[in-house]
Image 1 (cartoon, rainbow, N blue to C red):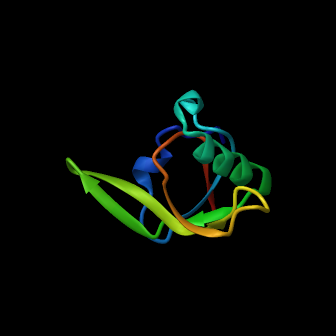
Image 2: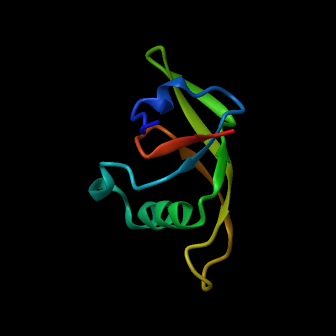
Image 3: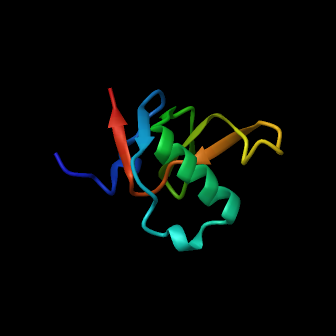
Length: 92
């Protein structure tokens, strides 16, 4: 089964996904966000959709369980991440 670039539009609360590759718009990411994506891809971290934000009738899924530090000189921080891009794969 191939990747579904529109998977994010079908996600519901409680769905689990992993980021299997950088989003296709990676050149537009802030350096810190790119570092977080790199870590998520490398670790195959599973994320759970924890909230949906509706904008013009489209549900945007968010995961808010990411505790991450850019490097050892930074403290760990809790992060929310909108999961509205390609590069996602569903995890059962």
